[in-house]
Image (cartoon, rainbow, N blue to C red; front, side):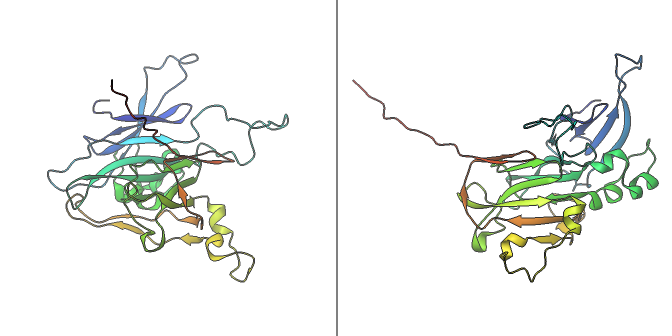
Length: 277
């Protein structure tokens, strides 16, 4: 297990590690040491990332899942329920992997690769049928249909994920898709829901009670990162989602989210004049 940069639990007995020097994500499984005498974690599969141009490398790969594996947090728990309503299963979460890309101006942009966790549980029949456990899974076999890769600079941490939902911010007006999160203060909140049920349920265009921004849109077309200075070939991702964006603008430093709430945080620097005698 050399060259590991980060790790995250996928389930109570499975975890993934990121290996930027090798350009892949590896999945490991283990038995409960309290009831088993196994020799430790065993590899369950390697998921390769897109190939890079000669001389380029993945400098780091940071991964996270929310909610984390464990007992669910319950607000006002109901005695007859073991977990909250709509609590996401371990197979229905988005894994966010932060990957720096080299921009056209030479400075790195912290992109985010959003991965549907179903692929780690062999719930994508195309991947499980075409790959053996001992063989690395190439990006083209597992990546495009299970991911969305955004080369947007999220270094401002104005994003959060929980279950199959991801929230971030977008610019205003013509700046709607701006990558420059550091220079724009007032921004819209943008919620992406990768739940298939959210895609299947549609809102009628004839519903005059809702404005256009409230209805949202379903995104099924592919996202592309062109080949060039970093990737050896074009990178495609097309995991479908429903997107809803607020009309109101917010000035925030960070956003956090759980199954019921979205919390916006704002850092305020208080400067006090120094007194000299």
